[in-house]
Length: 434
Image 1 (spheres, rainbow, N blue to C red):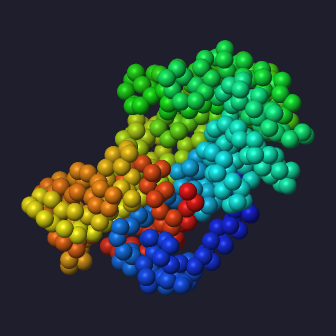
Image 2 (cartoon, rainbow, N blue to C red):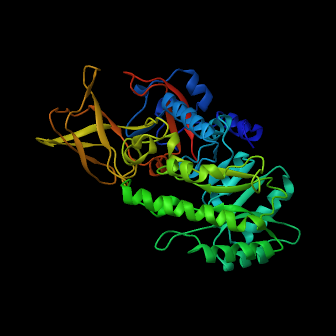
Image 3 (cartoon, helix red, strand yellow):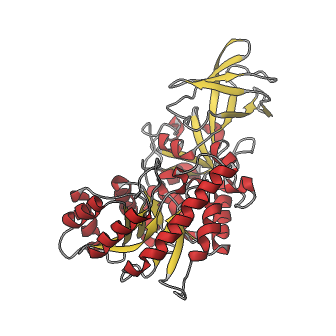
């Protein structure tokens, strides 16, 4: 599936009918009993919302989606964005309308959510082994012949359990996962992966449609040695594709897939694996190289800002589309202020928030020079002041690191037109389903 998805579009449209109230911590009392559509029709501004608050920037997200789509297209790559980052149907729809191949998900509950949204092509970057889950999946495929699904296997045990659990007459497309010693999941070494591929080939209910992996598990930085380890891994995956291609069953898939690519090293994927793309089957099975990058759509002002391929010169220009807004509620001593946002509201696993701007009592925004967030409690942030001081009641805009652990704290997220405006206009309310 590429382009629009009528079932998903209908889901997104119906979300506008949801009634707003206290269940959504981002929503102010003035919105109570309005539907999403009705409240947006009143023309709300950021100043109508309380703190703490997470927002998404409409222009930044649209720019990121377009930039990544163009970057992939010019390199002959397909993009199946990892949906775990946002779990937001409206964002999925925007990505698919920009040409995404499908949506990647991480586990059975997310697949169930994706089907509830109406997704027609789902790639599970994991193994599905629970017998009841596999029976549910088989029923989904029977009920909707247009539904396309694929997942991973990395062991003979996984192949056996899937084969035994699937109902007679059903089948699932799978990719063999290649791992690395000390890494995450995946068969350790080419010989083990080839053995798994042979077992899939011999299974009565599995079809081998490609090879897969996660290069982010073999490197944790962008130094020359780390990038070289990524290249070695990707070359091994290319070798696996070459050796098991004769076992592929593309009866329903139509093309084989080589799928890798988190949000940190997709430039290396393009260089090392991009040449495997073979849309006409001129040198072997028809093959698509599918990236699964997910964080790009929101990006950040922390971890991904530093590690994204764009920072190394070969990647799309991405802009952080997420910000937090917190109020100064205490200034108990010189050089220290406390904000009303903490670990329940903000990500902290890949770096603490970054103070950026301060709304002064006279309604003007100024930069916060030299300020840092030194630690978070559950509901408080410690703002260590530098050159600029703050006052109790001020609003501070924070840049954030790691969208995957930011959006999951919010079930409804205001989307602003331009987060750099003095009082940004709220143009959407993005529903998430974590």
